Image (cartoon, rainbow, N blue to C red; front, side, top):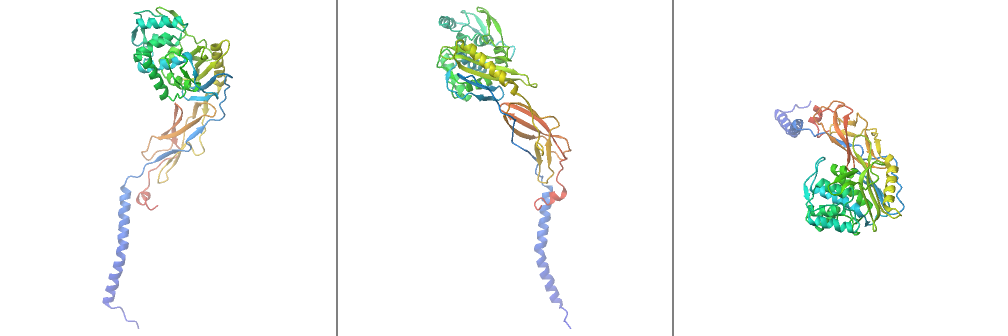
Length: 414
């Protein structure tokens, strides 16, 4: 018969068992403390990501360029879209005045309806006028002491293409035409006009050169100014000395053309930079067409006609394109506790564009206060190409709940 354990043996065993339980109890206590800390710690936020970073519109952009010279097509929002293969620096004649007008309005901005400062014509202005007229250049007659506003001078620059007015504006802005030309070239460099160099403010000097692609770039930024747009779309104005002055852009009002500038000389041939309106949706859009270096019996007329042909050919390619959401939505709301949701738009998503255009997609989260019921405008979908930006509200397809108690307690363990 086995001998029962002694009292000392039992005490020794219990003491040993208790010592073995201490680490386990400490671990359990530590887990409890950590879980309680996690429970009261702020939960991580919800995040949102687009299902695709880009979208490409179907088809391929197509345009037929003139057989001679160089050309390009773009828009006021997208910039350069397509260009002819030859894009060398060539004389651009009075197309130079686009940069001149842009800089004047940049230094002395005008609001629609404003005439701006009054500039008094000096003996130097009269001398420039007489000299330019004697060489057969495009001029606007001025007299000493005559007072013309900034807007009038810009109209004299752009409508009849007054070479003497370009010199007057250059001196008014920078003190001398040389200093103004320096500013023109600095601005061209800042706009990425790598094939452009200006030697004067009017374009009479054949050393003022550019290419079709660069002229899209300067016209794009110039057309952002509403006063510039108004002036280049003006058919005629009346001056104190010259009388009625007509816009030399004979295509104004035809083929949707609302500007911008013609140019013609013995060194440049015929040149025309156009801006044509596109009636799509409620936002203003302009196709920008450039044709340079046309040499025919009537070079300027040929440049204008070739430009109009390009505009007519591509106009139908610019329209609203529907964007179909991916099967999993335009994006996903995600979080660590897996209360996720696909994002859809309750309105049709369509963007203005052209065949083959690629646009960037991004999603901005608007709400993160949980819970978020199903169908809330929780985010915005941003679609951007060039300067064109369109936003659409996005809704969550299911309710997004806060983390439950178990997840908050054991977030590090599950």
